[in-house]
Each structure stands twice: as C-alpha cells, then as structure tokens.
Image (tube, rainbow, N blue to C red; front, side, top):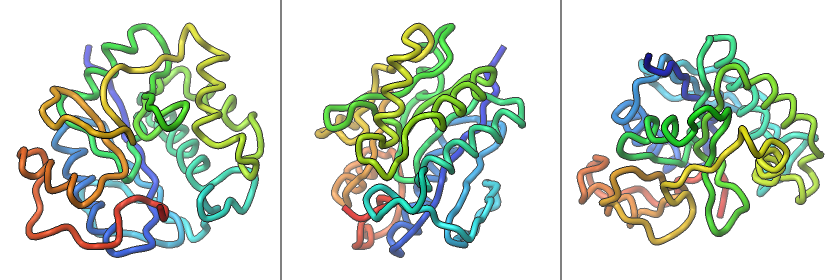
Length: 232
C-alpha cells in the first residue's frame, strides 16, 4: 500500500526574491511528489497566489533565531509543529520541506525506504548537528514528536535551536529516529547528477546550475536579494 503523506512548509519573505523563489519551490514540490495535500503556514499576513497549495495566513510573527526570537519558541518551530498536528488530523504522515529547500529524484520514496519501521527520519550535514529542512514523521508518532519537541528548552537560548532539539530527540529515541543517507542540505558542493538529493539555501549560480541540468525552470537571471527565509 502506498504511503499517504502531507507536505508542510512555513513562509515568510523579507524580499521580493524570496517570493520569486516560492514558485520554484512549489513547482519542485509537485514535480517530485504525490502528496495528499500541501500546506503552507505563513507569518506576518503574507500570502502568494496559488491554486495548488492550501495557505493558512497568520498576522503574528514569532521571529527567527537569526532575526530574534520573541517568545520561548520561534516562528519556525511553532509553524513546523502546527503543520505536523494538521497532518495528524488529516490522517497523514508528515513531511516538512522548508521554504528554501529543493529536492530531486524520488526523494520521498527514498526517505520511506530508509525509514523502514522507524518513526522519524531527517538529514545531516557538516555545518549543523542535524539537517532539519526536509524530514518525515509517521502519522502515529506525530503527537509524541510534537510533545517531545515542545517539551525541550527555550529557543531564546542559542543552545536550544531547532537543530539541537532534533538531535536530542534522535539521541533520546535512537531505535525509532534515524538519519537518511542522501542529499546535501547546506553542505557544498553538491552534484546535480545524483539520482536523489536535496539542497537548501541556494545561490543564484546554483539555481542556474540546476536549470542547466533540467531540474528546475525559470526565465532570465534570478533576482538579487537571496532566497532563504532569513538574512545571511
């Protein structure tokens, strides 16, 4: 039986270039997956036109670790946990795909294959203890995932960022939380000829490289300003 999953992502844009990139993200999502639904939870009242994605728009903005977290949990964490619970209510597994992450090849099938009978799987990279821009949580474990995550420390403390919390979760549940073995996340260089891979925080030159390999499409040159959801 095929796996039924929901893809969720947050959205916040400080620059027009991020709004431009969203449409590449959306095309990439639908070109490489077959989700039951795609949800975007947006902060600060922002919404883009899309007939394929269900948007939930919030006026609040809890902040980011780079720009400043306003409360015990950042906007990223609360968006992610909210989306996970929405997937649970939808009777789906939960796949998080961050707004500045692209994935190629049969990446969902690869995550399920490597997940096996475990409950959660995420990536890794050299710069952070965990790569949490793309991960999967099985439906029946979503409540435990969310309650464990929210039960950890205050994110205004730099020792309790989202990546650290995900790593603590893997250490706490080593038999059911795993790392997948593909992709790059923030690591560089990456090989666009890989059968399955994911990348995050792309530059204009890297977007052109992906286009030259037929993996994404856009006209002209990428706009200036950057494509990540926070300033570098």
